[in-house]
Image (cartoon, rainbow, N blue to C red):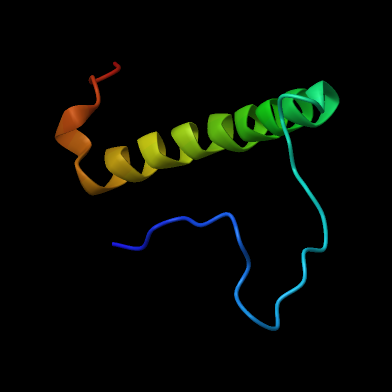
Length: 61
């Protein structure tokens, strides 16, 4: 397993910083984006499971 380090390897330069504690707007935006991506993923997974295993869904008359 790789370990994290605070110093960059030789030849690399830091191009920016992402600090979600200091940038609350970015933290909220990422949470909203994850929610927006997660909801359709849940329904797509549920529809895929229903098509693969029809016995998992209740029968509707």
